[in-house]
Picture: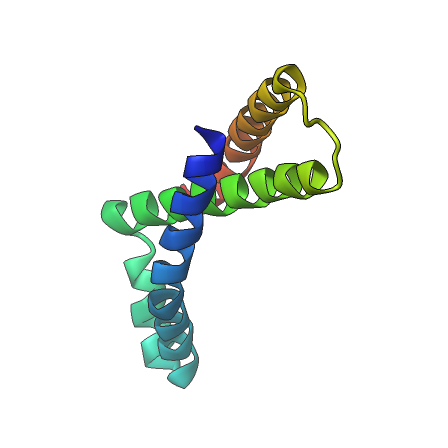
Length: 104
């Protein structure tokens, strides 16, 4: 499950990158475009989207560290792999609780 979500979160981040870069470019063009770009951040759908992207980033990051550890033959037994996947989910949950107030 964690490995599949790692791939899905990577795809989501890849697809969202052009939109985020366009938003950054739009916010840097002028003071008016900055105001318009920051105005979008106040809407509920955008906050939900950013929350989802935050989850995708955190999951991809922690699961990627898990995969790197497994690539160097740490935690390769089934029991250790299941434990490390639970640790990834716990770290993502705790990180989301800590970082969501910055979005909302």
